[in-house]
Length: 156
Image (cartoon, rainbow, N blue to C red; front, side, top):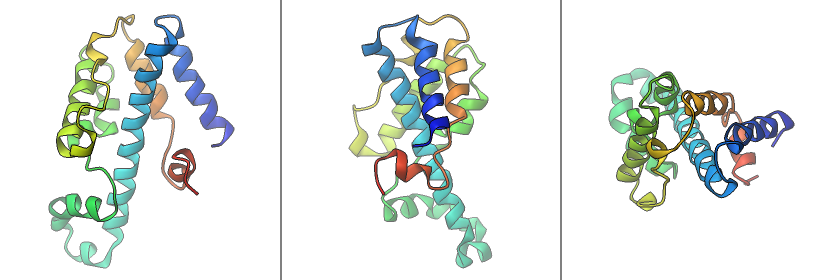
């Protein structure tokens, strides 16, 4: 992991340190990083799929075949309402905590091996207004594409 990414990760933790205990904020930060990671991985896989000759000729099948493509590549299926772009674009909304909880629920529903694993307490966080949105915006600056994904996940 490069220094810039490490600094961004520390910044996310710093944004919560004054509002909650480390035992609690690690779950908040790690949950958001997980969402960003699987969303970036999903987007990279979708982009790869779009470069395939078959899908270049038949783009209408991309959405239809994407779930199977994810399974084939051992990747998580990420529903539209759980994709990072949706959460980032809705971060300023006062209900961003509920949107993140709903994203976690939909990911668990679509990926049974994650059932009852993901943190779904974002709507109940006692954070100052705008703090969760700021956290989402900070995590948005971390890229898990273009080779970053493997290094951060601990694989070579």
